[in-house]
Image 1 (cartoon, rainbow, N blue to C red):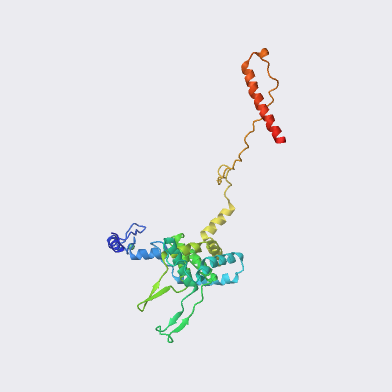
Image 2: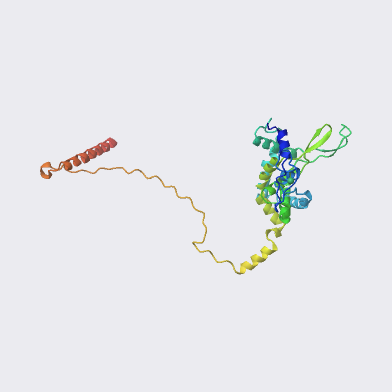
Length: 322
Ligand SMILES: [Zn+2]
């Protein structure tokens, strides 16, 4: 019997699976059926790594504002147009669909698709901010936020990209953690989903799998993000040490590599065109050898075979002509 309940009870007896870099473990109790305690599980869910942390909005908001200014000023540049088109196709337009892709998602991939839809839908249909106790007529709409635009998404991505370049300690790694950071920033543009149960509102933060899926989508913009970041903060291209090293190297460039030291990408072998099968063309055997002269029967036999082939060949030729 392995219901969720028994598995949870058995799992709670085990300690958290976390190990720090120094090799220390964690004494926390495992959460539900997870490998980690609540703290480390939350880190993993939020940032894609057990040691990671959510990047606070204040870390990138000023950078996001500058990026938005830059993007609005250069909307017609092909780089920006391409990036905005991509965001419209992958993030904005899926959120404009009025109904979710599945009535009841079954497989894991369907669940991820459904969750991703709910999140991008929330960005396009943000809930208005109300003030009051919920009674009709007494509640005042304080703020009715606009749907998220493609420019806003690109600006926040560039903001996060710049923030982690300027302060690398914000990220544990620049693989999945950067994907999660981008997704978290975009998903945090509007209020999270919220359900009211028995009069109490409870927030529904985006799921890990939806964050990962959206992060991987946004990561395709990395080239544009890097280009815009370099324009906004030219010094991130090279550290002062790298600049010094480059200047020192310019005077004494490295010698060219010898031919046998160079590395090549192996080229694929050329396909060999199948050659036509050789057609056997018999030759004229000439006059029949005379038995009386040579006295060799084998010679006569060979001549007979050649004569037969020759005759067949002549017949096929006449057939072709007629
Ligand atoms: Zn732990």
